Image (cartoon, rainbow over all chains, first blue to last red; front, side, top):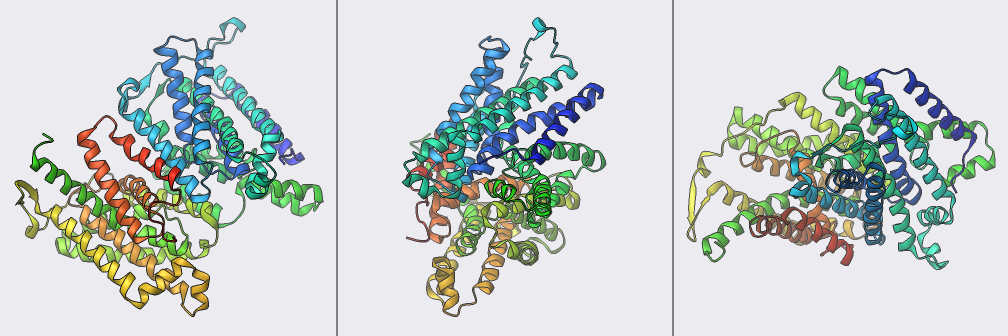
Length: 326
Length: 289
């Protein structure tokens, strides 16, 4: 099962302290990047939950994020809900959609699962792209940020928004870790290892997969709400499969199935993107080469690599067991 | 409009033309998957590379120079990829393959932008195929009829090779059970290489014939990738018949969907794919019965 090794706890604390400290000293541009990292981190934690632990490599998480973003914006603007009820609605919608997708795709494995999720993601993308209700190609603008003036916080300020986004990452992480430690999470990891055995033990496989996928979808929907609040403009591009592909890249760069690694990956990815794109317009090529190098090196991303090295230095049976599960 | 025979003829020809283009792309991808269990997301990039090579060579050697040399150039690129990346990842599992070839897409898109720039490139239809042909009461561009004919010719040639020759029998044996085929003395590794390179050449050919019809842009490989994947998943991974069936289904659903029910058009094909995956997860005509 998923355990918090000392290394993971150290990395988490460093990430939390580092991001909060940076949130208090950074200028406007730095804060925007911080919010971008936080939103990506939520999405990749959601993806790692199903891909890393359940072996369900999804190419529809971009679409789930987009559905969250659109549902939030429509609920807040057209239906006139205030921000928090609209967020709850959007997260519930993403979760419901993810449950249906997860239930339908539960029978497919490997490349078929990837293709099936890709199909559903593109279906959502085409629907939003073509539907006049959602502004089609032009997208929608004017998503509100939550009003926390009652407790003296003004989220239109980018510093407050960045801290709020970091708090949401923490919430996401706690939900994901709690899911993995629950009975459902153990079933999910078991399914990844040996589906037949769990079926024989009496687990309703499709329901376990669909529920895990729904939780992951809810988190992706939350990322979508934050994305809509952050830029206050959304376009169908959010739902495109390349967003899902990029999220998968981030998970791999950070370390699949470590839950902490993808957050590290999100930090590296966004910072690299901004650093490299300042130097050359061809930053995608650099990212592509880094990705190929990481996958060919057979290391489990940056964080997975560090974990493996630490485990090799102190060969304790407990650590190795945790590694095998992750 | 729908009672007019000309309308149906015209749309059928459009659908056939799209189907044949997709067939050229998907047949290589699907046989590579069937034989090697390798998922090559960069297949669309090879198609884009073929289109760019054809466009560049057409400027120097004329259309036919590009038409014949572009597939060779793409095949050469495929050989390089095979020895640098593909061979070592053969047994790495679908996840690593998807990621590596996804990274390759990133590299390929930027490489084409770097070499050929961001602006679309157009090339002229060859003089032989200029103009229109009257067919059952409709005027149809001759070049598009040429694409249909080319697709059918490739289909006939591949069917002949796969069902009537020894190489074809070896490939079918490899798709069915590669370990057993290797035990029977077939050099499966060399066959993989051959199939991969031929698949790349066909993708390049598709790019070369598509270049005069579509504009040649850096993201054309990415745009064609999803339709190609849909075709091979609907048809069934690894089978030639599946690639034909998938291409025809995609071409006709897409073309007639666009004119008969424009509001649902783009969702239609994905809904069809989802339905196929639910009812027959292995595709309609999988390679292994």
